[in-house]
Length: 318
Length: 260
Image 1: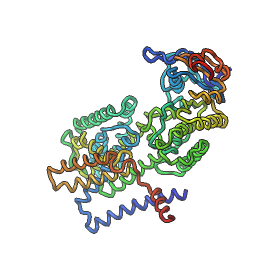
Image 2: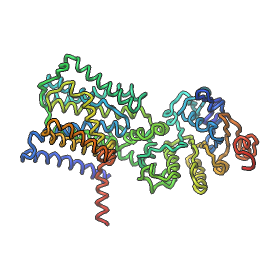
Image 3: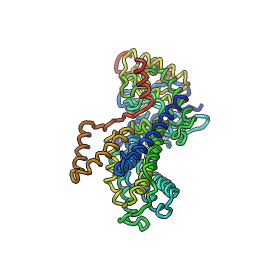
Image 4: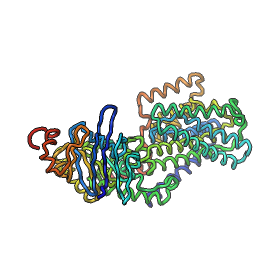
């Protein structure tokens, strides 16, 4: 019990320290608006990609519809905060977006996971996301294909930072529990899992719903921070770029997702000076990593304070 | 008298092939029964029928627990597992990329409660449940001499150990009936002898019923109280090991000519 408390406190300290570190760097001027913008984008991508990693890396289901759920969060925030332009309005819009995304994911998940696997599932989830996008494209309230402008900026980097910590905490704790083990068992062997009494469909849908909910959070942050959204932001290319982060970092490693989101975020920012060459260099970097490290940067390795403690403990004794 | 598990006229057809043809059998509480037969006799298919992995074409399978009768033919694999039927697989199906410990813990999923919020916010009851689960898993692993390998990935275990782990995992679901599909396959005589004792011990200690498929006759004759012989999908004979040993039909169909 005491040891557990120690780890909880250590993580809390790390999170708070991270916050003040960024805060201090902004104050001294090391982090300017440009870099702050990059950090927020990285944060949003972390939320998106960790959620997708839960679906792909841990429950083993291939989803290509992540941008659709992001759109739900983004539009919920855009519409609600344009009417209620307060902090409270933003929080309400965040929760509405999450609830709506969860509900839709539940319906889509239940319909597809009972019958489809692998590539077929990817196509079905892609279809679901396109349906969401097309509905948004044709509604008046969402501004049609032109999208929405002048969304009040109600979130800044601290909001993003706190939500990155919170979603990661929730996802990691979920994975390291009885429920997480059931989800991994589904990935490993569905037939054996069922023989152990694990309802495979239920756990696949659970992972899908949780992943979709985090995507909605990221969407809300995106809308409120960037202040402009349109349906074209949430097409298949967005889903793929989230997928790229997951695959690059390592399918089944949340630490890897963090690393990949940071690496790609920085790479993306640095390459902005190269203009048209940017996408080419980006793509080559991806290809190289996939050739030399097909399991992603970190495979399924996970950073853990507990193991770190053991490691150093051994060194001291030895 | 009511049997624990009663199978009546079970039939399973795959296209034109009748894999299991009109098989009737029963299992009583605390029994250790063997199912033998040549390759392709339909033994594994029968296991799949009993555990709900494959639906029956026709026939009845009834489970009687706590004075209630459940019709297993209308239930799926998950529901049947929840009713207390657990199994191992002929071609080992462990959760390969999970640790030995996690393999066992996973099988306990339905036996313990851990709410979403309790888990996510690490409330004290999360630690309590995890501790309980771990203690139960450690006890099982200890019986099967797997304590030292609990942190290893299942796929890195030697073959015989993987088979043992599969039995542990099946036991972790707290079954009433345990189906073992060729538990001694690929083991050397010494390992087989160990396993024989282990199965006997587990069956007594946990008070469960065991039905096992096995080709190793020394194991079957040592363990089984009753034997069912299957050949080409049909029940050829049933009886005590002594009766089966001397049954001419069985000797002809399965054991070939000469002595066992």
